[in-house]
Length: 285
Ligand code: AMP
Image (cartoon, rainbow, N blue to C red):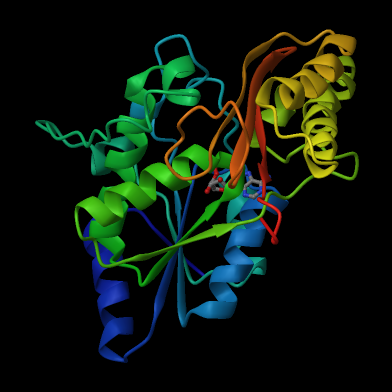
């Protein structure tokens, strides 16, 4: 596996592969790899001739009071894990490579970024995501890029950018990878002390409880959400948001008929965690 720092180096390496008619898969990440990241890399490995992973803690998607400085970084460990997953190129640029002096462009997606994490963290967050992902697509020009359903709203934002700007890249969303007790894997789980780590299991348990109610035939949004809220309350968690939204356009849904995204964000100990379940419409409806 090559570790590359500059855009020309990546272009040259990918260009060579393209001359040989190789397909290129890209996995954008911020590092601190866990099984969630590795599942995307393995999927990319199965489906492409050349696999590029970007490792870049993107400053523009962090707010002033967020954890940019504290975000876990361990490039040597990440490089070992990526190599073991069969990655060909780890692109780990400096911030100045991505945002040179005079950088002035931002991509803003309207509508779907106004809710959930866009409302909770601020509009800058998805502007930062959309801009850096578009840049990575321009640098690597992948055939397919791989994202985790863990960040469900991010997947929708990236798909929207690709559609609206006619970018020639396929977007593949991969399932959420969880710890044995159901906690969604996240680089931010390292912030959890043992008490908070135990408390954090309530997020997935809450989503499970709501999904069971839905599965049993409940269609009233408030009733479904109440099942989740009870579990969070019992665990002493006050969510930043706990919402049911249309799975494609993120409109609020009061009565669940089609596919719905059940999404939660909460501070647990020192971490801000997000999780979600997709509530699928019954096949016969
Ligand atoms: P991050 O490094 O947190 O920006 O994540 C990089 C990619 O890995 C994103 O597409 C995430 O959605 C995905 N990812 C993070 N955690 C998980 C997880 N537990 N399961 C599946 N994908 C994940």
